[in-house]
Image (cartoon, rainbow, N blue to C red; front, side, top):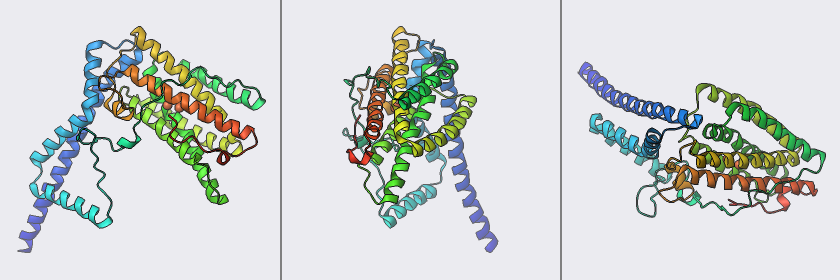
Length: 346
Ligand SMILES: [Fe+2]
Ligand SMILES: [Fe+2]
């Protein structure tokens, strides 16, 4: 009898494991297919000569990829999963929610359809302020300003050399760096607030908002570009160096650190302007905007990559202002907390 029970248990375990393994392989397959297709378009975008047919098709695929792939995977999994597993999962989910009282997080859009993004919620979406002055420049006056300015300018040279006119790839790679300073600054201000038993003036949140906004730029460009293995390795290396350098720099002189970021943002505006020129010339195909961008920036459904670059560039201009402003506060011998942070400044 025990043997019978044992074999029954083994059988049901195998069935559940089988279903789980199957669902994993289905996911892996779908992902691999998506990546394989993405690679070809990336090559086109990076070479600046994407052909209209395939690129468009792929991006359209990308826009719907998450939803469609998930739907397909669900259907496949539902077909092979024993009903007991579905019931168990539902029970498990319900139990966790009811025990801890944590809401499921299921959100619907205004039109009643389910909100598909877990990385941001509808109340975090916004419309970018495109009227911001893109040409504003902080003229370096002091030695420290000049050092910050020339540090950034000297970084431009290897960047131009490496990426040349592959602006899709360039944007994606640079966003992996751009999202670091806000997080480091926010972290250090957070610790300072704890150490000194004092308010931050909202600057912790403002800097973390900036980091999150930059990360959303990355999530967006990931949809139209796929990094090669050596580019991923480069991100690892650069992040290791840049995170530590910025951490140290911010501890020594937040005035200098914010000025550097202010100039980095000025460079970002320039890069995105070049990106737009390539799109207008047609050397980079103006494919439909990724779905994530449409939801995050509340763009019209028929938006294109050009519209996305426009809003991202406006974001960079806002980051420029915030960081130069933060540096100016320090220049006036004040602390950031003495001036209310520009929260929600997009
Ligand atoms: Fe950015
Ligand atoms: Fe930025």
